[in-house]
Image 1 (cartoon, rainbow, N blue to C red):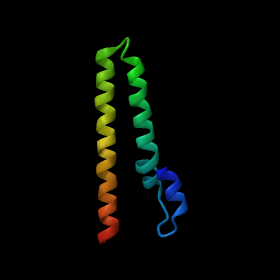
Image 2: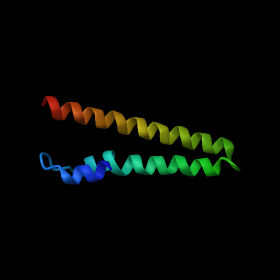
Image 3: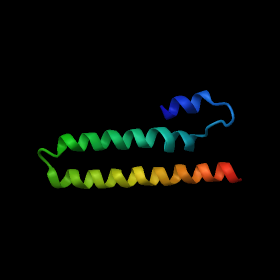
Length: 75
């Protein structure tokens, strides 16, 4: 949904970094968390590390996206 909105708007042309942090990284992170749910049946401890690591990736992506929003609005 975010990627479609990025394509439709015309006020700003998204750069490579925008595509990575707004579209690609969250999609990969959520898919990996879903995959660790299936892996938890046989590899419980390892899957917890996977969820933690990809949770950090989602948090860093959110921080980056918030910083971009503030920088775009005020500079």
